[in-house]
Length: 162
Length: 204
Image (cartoon, rainbow over all chains, first blue to last red; front, top):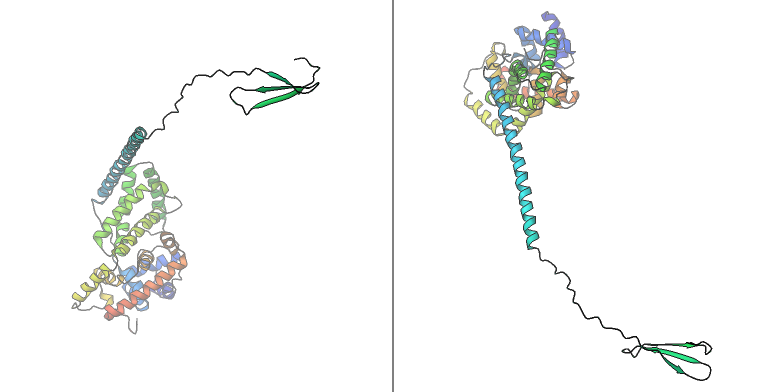
């Protein structure tokens, strides 16, 4: 790519208006061309600075091992946390069970209703008595023995024989 | 060159390999995952370092990103480039760490700059990569997390706007807005801290 082409694309690059392919081409050229980078610096120092930053990637031989070790550690931690959670639930359930048991034991109970056997009083069936009032009318009155207030009376045709 | 050079045939085949490896890793193959780590560790660490501006913290975040990737392989959607998915995890973790760090670090870096102000300025075209890195670290302190993430992913790492949008979980317009805002902030900070490097006639 020529520097002249880059100069033509410079305004569009600064206005964030370049197509993606052209943008990548532009960036690749400016990274390697100090003169074009100087031009870009004149237009926008921040954009020029971004392209002048070192591209070298930090290398670290132990990084991968450390990541894998971190993964294993997290796995162990999660497993322990899961076990802890299970034991905590079991302990909570046991505690609840014991508490319920104790509460049941100490709960004030309502005594069962006591049934007192009373001697059955033989009810005396009152003997009917007959009273005759007037002619041709019979009045039968039945009165229980103990309860003077209760009276049953009925009138029967004299033709009917009891 | 960034890890994600997306538009060459070599990258297309590498991405296909990544998907095969990811599938094997999802089935529990640790060796396949180790290959993925080996292949992408550089890019992920560099991305985290550019967002966090701290190599050591970036290393920890990169490790955590790979561990999280392993744990969430079942959720990996093969329609995504594996590297984009990985970058998403790493970038989100880095931004979370950045937000958690708060303003404490910004104060610290300002102090460092004040201590080192006696260094003789150099012309921008003579700046070495290490010096650019150092200046960028100091200027980027002023960027809010979202702007820093968008700028690093798009302008430093060279990802496409659509990929950055996918990684950040926002629209392409939002990504462009973040990038424009980041550029303005960087230029303003350059004028304030390193006026000697400002382009001729350029004002903040």
